[in-house]
Image (cartoon, one colour):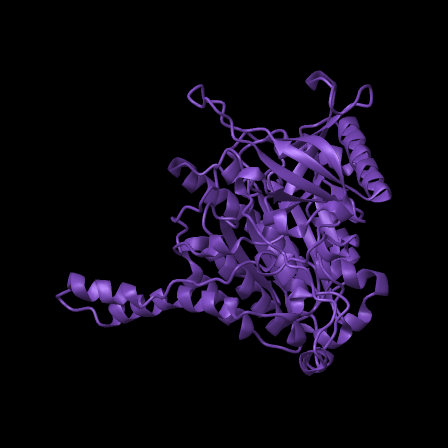
Length: 526
């Protein structure tokens, strides 16, 4: 039986839930019995703390609603029982500090029984937590378990399959076994895949009505950070996010009636985190501008079904980058489990055919977004338009494109044919002194954002601890003192997104500029 079908049949037993509650709870199980734990400990702790600082500061519904952490030594130990992440960063930091202080050099005997016990204990803990919180309105009904180990991943999967055959796994969405290896132990073709930390499909193993995902990854901060950042993606698969509507081949694009449209069902995925989402308060109460606008798309949270109707094709070299704006999104074939398997397969093949044809023709697509608000009080409908760009992967890139009303007058003076030598020479010398890279790699640049976020999240903890130590009969401070304390937390100042700083005059034909992640060089990761 196909693993995806089997998984879908199990998932259909869950009740329907709201879109913002579809993020699963996470149980991270860290196997520290390997001799390489000394190398993995520091990079794992840093990567986990970096990602969770982002998750705590992102406004809107929490992307990691519940988190628990286990370590497996000679037996399993729960360092962090289930906590609501946005309200518990201090506990998370204490847990990570304890993780860093664990004995090194693999001083514990290896074996999979401790991992199995941690899985069972985590599932039991999740059931108990769910029973106690359902009264409060919580609708989260699934959990994912991530196992980090330096042991053989395949042997770990076999051991889990054998030991979990009689365990109740109704609430378990997926088990992810991550085999952490040093860079030298990876096959060359696996290096880029590990850097991307994308969810693979070829290594999914069907077991007991759910998926076990086996993945190999390097023991460096960037690889582990990208793995944990997959938690920030929208994990809901209850329905597709986007309908891409193409005119059928029976008539021309201009005369094709709406009833003859080809519909490709797709999912949206963020390419970048919106810096504006990090400007809110720590509890995520600040609303982002236009997050629910009826004429703009957003990938998080996926609360509506968007419809993009293709109106015409454009030559790739004819689109000026200066008229594109906003954050880019990735379009992928949908993985909605409610669709029939044959429909999913046909939809995926059609999507791949579209990508291939656009690359062959060197075309982009201009599409109009159908407005979501159909309120009768809206006498005039405002449309927004998007450019859809192909790549050499099975994805499309979509960005908003300017329309007449938004375009500002600009004068572009022509370049002078000749320049005085006294100015041309110094400019050439300055340019020759610059280091030249073939591609831009964002992994080479750091902005100290992680340090800033952690300092903001850490300050309230220090103040609370000071208040507990210095408890006096006068527990309530003056309003003036409270206001002064709040003023010490400086707002997060974010630079404009890279797409807003500089844009070349014309879009490059080479689609590698928006590929998922540049290949990392050996020197940078060492």
